[in-house]
Image (cartoon, rainbow, N blue to C red):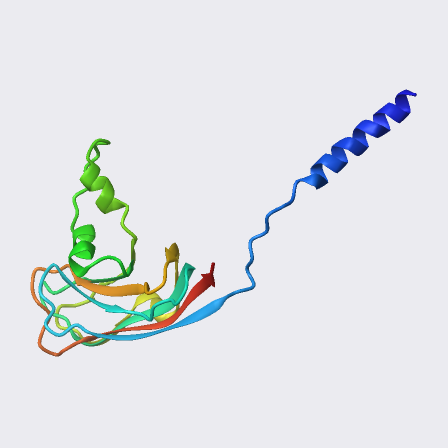
Length: 192
């Protein structure tokens, strides 16, 4: 009789486990969003950014990551120019809000709500173009021209996209050679 009781208990536990449905995430709906941007940096002033937007989504979607190459062409390095930082931000943020994120001085105080809000903005730094000599000229690329994967996991709703930015960290404006920032790659998009 005890064997039958044990068998009944095991079957009850097994059936209880199967009674709970498992939720599976639908990963079949994937969109490879093309990214091909050419930003004119012109005479980008010190501590200033320039941005360009990608296409927007037509329905709610998750952008899990971007895979892209980043380069500068027609750049003339000079003393106190650069380094030039490149990154990506959610399209909800204006240029001033992105610059505020980049120039913030983070307080270590838990009660500083403004600093917390700025720190939690959906802005990612991808890399920095550092020029080897102040008299160099030509083209520069991050990661030796290889694609860089940047994790985002941002939800975009209808009409939203991504903004890519270049930021001059130097104390002088860029030279007048009219440099261009080039971003080529794709975004991994999952409609919801």
